[in-house]
Image 1 (cartoon, rainbow, N blue to C red):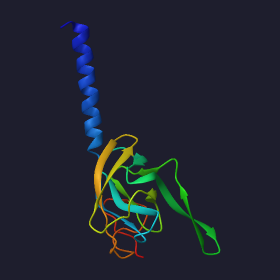
Image 2 (image 1 turned 90 degrees about the vertical axis):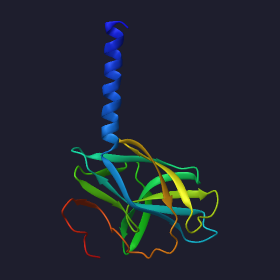
Image 3 (image 1 turned 180 degrees about the vertical axis):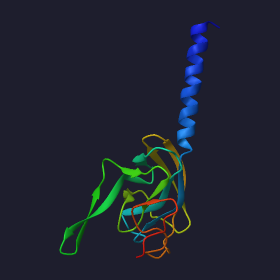
Image 4 (image 1 turned 45 degrees about the vertical axis):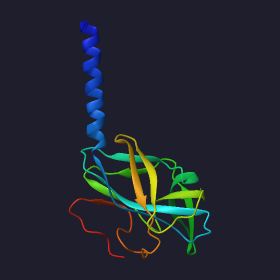
Length: 166
């Protein structure tokens, strides 16, 4: 093997090792999905994204075969008590050493054009795509019985802080 080949192999190994380390910086907690009923054409997924790394990261996309379209969404207050759901094309920042909650009434994963109804206890294959940590393939359980307000409620939380009251 020539010196140039060894050098290229070493660089490739370091690049892959760096990507693997970055991939370990994001942890997914308390993920669940739900829809409003058996005939629903849309559903949503919620979870807490923990960034154990030293740099901010960003959830930039999500993919799944369970729906025709899967997008990152949020709710925006339009005033007069009107909330509008909308796609967030830039994704969500997960702060270094902190968390970002995808929760009801806030940021979430939106499944549109469901290919089959969400059934209690089913597992949904989903790929989360992060700017730095890369792709994370996870299975999200369907929990149609979970009450609103269970778990995190919104926003970014630094480690050591408590969840906001709501």
